[in-house]
Length: 223
Ligand SMILES: Nc1ncnc2c1ncn2[C@@H]1O[C@H](COP(=O)(O)OP(=O)(O)O)[C@@H](O)[C@H]1O
Ligand SMILES: Nc1ccn([C@@H]2O[C@H](COP(=O)(O)OP(=O)(O)O)[C@@H](O)[C@H]2O)c(=O)n1
Image 1 (cartoon, rainbow, N blue to C red):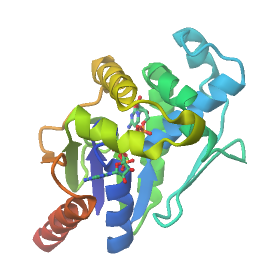
Image 2 (image 1 turned 180 degrees about the vertical axis):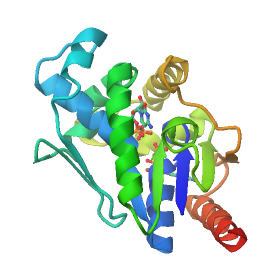
Image 3 (image 1 turned 60 degrees about the horizontal axis):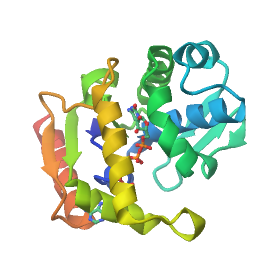
Image 4 (image 1 turned 90 degrees about the horizontal axis):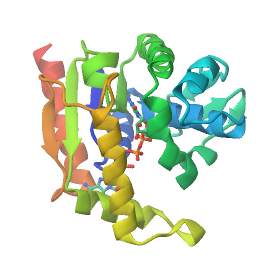
């Protein structure tokens, strides 16, 4: 059972995917964390993320390893734990530039396919282009949406201390990132033709999880 969950930022992909994978005994892969890890490596190694040629040349250097237990997903870069540094606003604001570089996408997509192929018990993979490009033969494809207001409110709720910013600032950053991700040439953020769209604006997280679990169970029963 391969489940692909795509959608813009703050629609609930990570929370839903982890919970669905835990409930159904599947592995879990956060592909956004891999693009964030690549971006963090570029920044720490002095690569200009706005220079696509420089990013392309460096892309094969970092070794990214993802742990796929939904109860405790992990990400390391060259053996170092990257879970915390990949979530800074600096990385968030630069990740779309790095993820738009075709050489980066080719490498990361190959890595994602090999992780999915190794997950013998099945896997939930979340991102932007899983249903369209990475795993077009997934058994079930979900595309999560929500209004920009709901997504910004959810995201600002997560930012505390010196990273806390006004919800309007969060909303603007989120809309800019969506536009970059949906507008790039190579495998943009898009709903696959055969994906089930779920608008989560007025749903609780528990309702979204229950909806996806039901869809997986229906697929299992049918297959
Ligand atoms: N349906 C929902 N209602 C309210 N809050 C939600 C819902 N889904 C997710 N959240 C919260 O919104 C934030 C972003 O969710 P996340 O799963 O990280 O989204 P994504 O992976 O799509 O960016 C998290 O704090 C999460 O707990
Ligand atoms: N399959 C994917 C997943 C993420 N990404 C890129 O990685 C960024 C971070 O993804 P994420 O899922 O961690 O973002 P959030 O939804 O958590 O804010 C996105 O804005 C995209 O630029 C991508 O290009 N393709």
